[in-house]
Image (cartoon, rainbow, N blue to C red; front, side):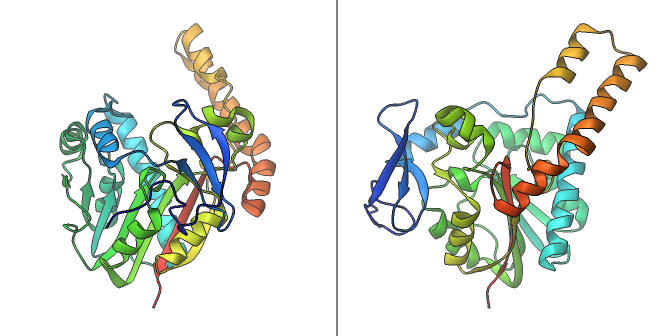
Length: 299
């Protein structure tokens, strides 16, 4: 099927408002005046994106074992909470799409799923096999297993052209009681208000879609899912990064004192600074760093 990469990928209209000129001046962030969807205009070609992802460096390659253990524990806790919201029990087949080195795949396997990761980057596949012993393959969506109890995509949907069509294809692989869960950068994050085109939500050339709570909900519902939750559970809410803890670890020798100071700063941010802005983000959909979602297959 031939698509018009200059039209809105959600509704197909050309009634667009250009927002930001991106790092490559041939591309802009555009908002559809008809449906509100926000995206990179025009979409980059499939060939360009394929070559880019095959050769890019890994985000978390070279991490030590303890870093991986913490990441798996954090992802396990997040998935457990999302499953509880969606009423999904941790059994049956699961797929993590855009698996990277397999952190979410390892988390799903630990929860009891028959877990598979799908990832195009061969370095990531090898790293996942070595770090976790999990099954990660380069498969197309059509080759993906069916009757899935769980399909996850963390920080992936913003990379995929025509996300509603993609999620509609995913739905054909789901069990009738299945759930999808994941996360995307929030276009309405405070970082985007402060940094504009240099914010994470508009990261060039990877983030071809920019989601708000409303447009993410529209995308999932339009693909045949019932949205259970879209919000900002930690650490996806408001993030204030000063670099103070990293600076302390750099200038002071490792020991009890620096560990206690870092722990105190962490407690202050978690218990005193973050609750109010995160409550605001959860209520309004504004300022939070990333949107987390879970949805069920609609009967």
